[in-house]
Amino acid sequence: MLTLNSIAKTYQTDKIETIALKEINLNIKKGEFISIMGPSGCGKSTLLNIMGLLDAPSDGSVSIDGVEISSYQDKGLASIRNEKIGFIFQSFHLIQDLRVIDNVELPLLYRKISAKQRRHLALQALEKVGLKARVDHFPSQLSGGQQQRVAIARAIVGKPELLLADEPTGNLDSHMGNEIMQILESLHKDDNTTIVMVTHDDELAKRTERVVRVYDGQLIH
Image 1: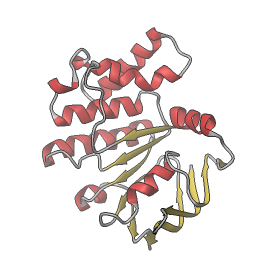
Image 2: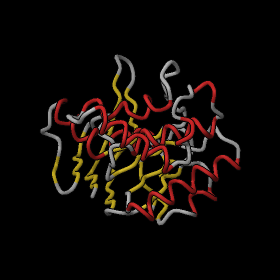
Image 3: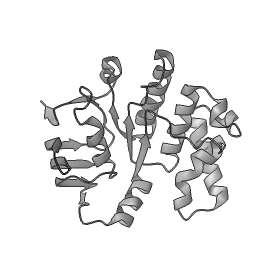
């Protein structure tokens, strides 16, 4: 489903060049659940951003469903992100003055569907994460684990084929972290969602199908 071919990423300033990634070759199959591990600053989040088309590589190519996307302009990339990719972050990134239901509906505002259909899909997503009873609450009225579940509902509301999770349990205690992991496992098993998860937690990584390790911007085999 996702192919990274000879990916490199370099950040250049007037005085210094920082190599974040070099010679990354990675194939992710449809329906696979993989975790990416490595020390802080090794390039894991940069790699995830390139997978999610949030950042462009300095060299190499990204292909999604067999289509190489380097020629796509911003509008085309945004369309692929909206239709095919869902994002979950360590910090929940919910809009505090919007209700739960409105936060979940946000990605659907960029699609040509009715308000009634948006609401239906948002309620479906919230039911999957066990928060259908909280639709009219605001983020400040929820626990950290509940806020992350709202963030997951927002990520899956458009039924993406690929879900990218950057330390989704990093701000949660072990109990809440396990709940979030169970939701991800359910999405993988029941909906055949392809999931790539960055984590520092060895126990969570063991629950995925494959572990990819990054060190100093390179994959370790």
